[in-house]
Image 1 (cartoon, rainbow, N blue to C red):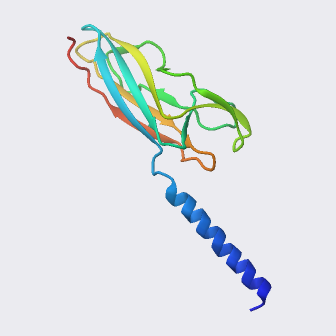
Image 2: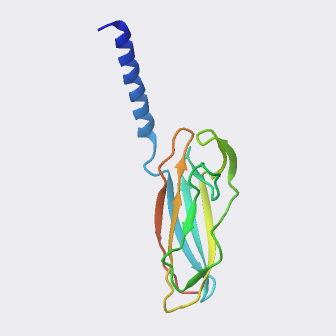
Image 3: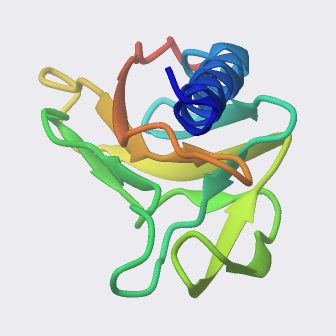
Length: 159
């Protein structure tokens, strides 16, 4: 086998090995989610969703430019007998930065961020909370595919 061909094969083997090592270090899910429901009265409450983002990763903001990454969005489809006061509000302002992968200015959070939304029970007999979040976790080299996390929410008795 000619030396040139050996160099090409060796280069390919090294490249594949480096890529495999990079992917092996990526967490299966770079964002973990928790939720909490707290009642302020018999009919008014707050849902808090907490995102715990793995070190070196970030969670994209709630509004993204066209052609950019998938924004973080919440859905309350399946909820009954409750009325939500808008969309969940983040506990911190996201970082705004130019993302080379998407060639766009994007917003994101790192570390831990909480999203809260108030709700009112409109029909106590049917009151049920259902929620999900669709999001993307990325680092400087790669992104996890968009994921949807469904929350199991229980309305506690008011104190």
